[in-house]
Length: 262
Image (cartoon, rainbow, N blue to C red; front, side):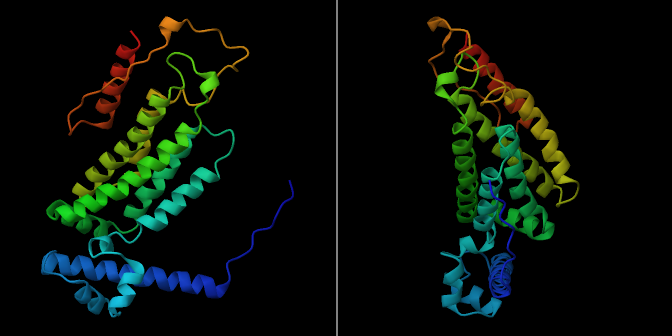
């Protein structure tokens, strides 16, 4: 394969990107300040635009609605996460790739702790903001699920290994672990090494799910045949408390999967 040298971004493009980022951040800051002082319902798009020093039409070039304004980075972060998945080395475990991807989301919040803490407070108080946040998180979940399912090989399926259900549960577990660690960090005022906390949660996830999804399998030609009665066909359901830790959630999932194989 021919090596293609990396070309630097043209100055004009870099300048335009920086300006766009600055305007989005200014709008987000103005929106959060107005939501905090006037209230979400009483704040208008015109007021947010005026506070940021831009016209109403400029606001709508960046955001579709006022609730979207306090989440200025999700679109760009989703692009970075996709780039992590697309650039993964062939030998990397797909679950490790997904963990690296969700770390990009965590870093988005950790870059501005004070802003993230205030945004967290607002989303707890305003249902519309909470719903928008949930929808944003669901986009990462779908992205990771598609990626892990892409590493499922139907021809190599054996009982208890490389199940599409396992791929979907693993993707949800990565997102759930991220959300748990992030909420705990935000409730603590954005203090502490949140990335180290997330890495600990990843260790738990890898221990539970790290043997499937295309790594370390025998090829279909050498794999031992699996008796039909050993192939589970039912969907299992795990139950856990909403305040359960990532470890407790994963243990519940693991027990449910084991019972489904009996």
